[in-house]
Image 1 (cartoon, one colour):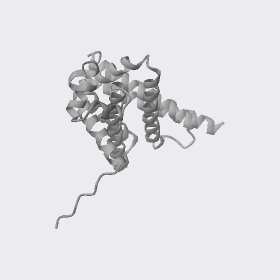
Image 2 (tube, rainbow, N blue to C red):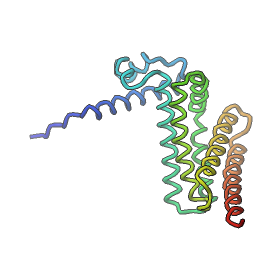
Image 3 (cartoon, helix red, strand yellow):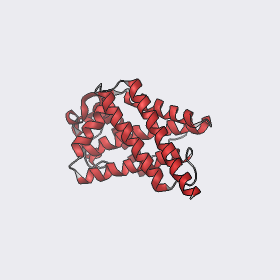
Image 4 (cartoon, rainbow, N blue to C red):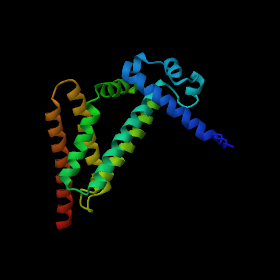
Length: 212
């Protein structure tokens, strides 16, 4: 006699709904952009009611933020695993970070969605708070990666400063590359140099303190 499938708990059912909504929303956002995608279209594509979407997300922009977060976390996770497993040099780690960045920014639709989302929420305090939380998460992960390349004397505040500098450069170069201000090769070299310079600068600061 075949075993009966165990019913999903409320939390499991809600998580499944969220993932199905995010899957459908990601496809629509990348194909049509934030403005042209509506909650009704997301609900139809996900096979859910609009009420189910609003039961899990506060707005269309909130759905978009979660789509971008999911893509970002997947990228960082893959990058971190590659660095951790390679046990390579600093140059190897920088090369992995730049390659991961290249993979992300080759998706022009993803970069365009990030820009459109940023413009849409810059006067929305509630959604900006959500985005700031996501950015803090990314900075924390990037700071953890930098820890492996920096002397132990480097402070948490200094690591955060370096992470902010690198992330800002990565985002700016992504937009510049999409707009053909720089080509992919030039942008990759600039990003690699930026990471290397931050590591060198923070290492020098800590060495100066240790010597004094």
